[in-house]
Image (cartoon, rainbow, N blue to C red):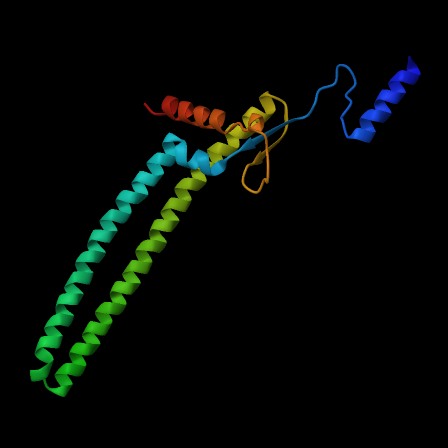
Length: 176
């Protein structure tokens, strides 16, 4: 009998099959798709909608300023023939300053929007980390890893949907 167990263990090691002693547990590993969590949680959807609305407001303002600049440039083109050289130079400086201001404002809005989105997503990621750690502790996971960067992982390891469900449930209980 002892010889048979030794042979089975040896064959298992040679073929790469893990042989676990009776009563021992296999390490649990989980995978979470962070991008899916951001895209599909209620909070993630709200962040995306807030950013979209904020950008739309900024875009309308920028479009208005751009149209005003184009109108001023058109007027300059029509009237430049009758302007003195000094007047042309002044008007060109003014139009150049308006163009620079529009570029600066566009960049500022993009930067501000990016910072706002980043801060809000960081809050969601903190909650994601808390939920993932809680699942890991309660269910005895050895490792829970982000899905991005993995070449392959079986779908059985993916706990993303559970994480989304818990985050959405926690959000509903926290909202009065």
